[in-house]
Image (tube, rainbow, N blue to C red; front, top):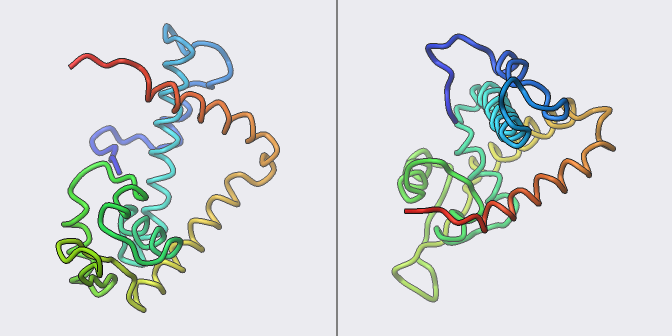
Length: 172
């Protein structure tokens, strides 16, 4: 989760400054750049709100994501968890280690590969995952209330952009 420290602008102010993705170009920016900025601002605003909601649980957004992913899938390997959780920084093994130390996760050697581990929720981790899921669900439901029918096209466009981005050549 990135922070806006030093600039003093709320996520809402950033969204307002970035212009409307559907209203043409924002200043001299092209529509695709305005769209990309809008997506990034939306992600930041969501992270800020979730961080506020998860703070009383003493969880970061990434920790909550790990707990909710394990709630959905059940025990998994470190590689499996890394595929499910989009973490921007750090190493999943360090994150898991800290969460094991806190009593939220348990690790056991994998039955088919003693070098690998299987990660699972403890009872405390499951309880916090359920609380985090409820908080996230309430935020999403209230945010999108009344505009649910408008989301299909947005989801399709964003999926198409994501697919195209995977195939854009990047120079080293």
